[in-house]
Image (cartoon, rainbow, N blue to C red; front, side):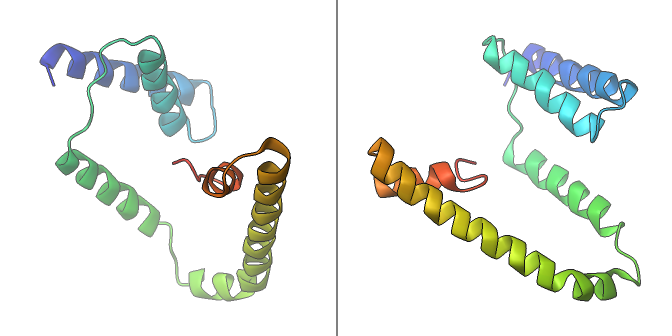
Length: 124
């Protein structure tokens, strides 16, 4: 990783995060930085990767931020929402299996490709 690509990537991430925030996009900093750096990658400009220790720090900060959104009412709200959550997860699973079967039958995809193509976030 060279300094120029690190500065370019960081600058684009910060500028696009700021722009998305000014435009009041939902999750502006996250969406803006993702799109800005994504554009760098699409145009094959030098984009610095984040090393493993940096990812650890960032994921820890995100967990910290999300943890701060919990309150004393969170467990009760989760209990109330448990049935709708389970129904939604079940529906996603059933829909994913049906879609994978259809992709396998109609498009001739192998089983694992069809399952990954039908799964939300399956490629990630």
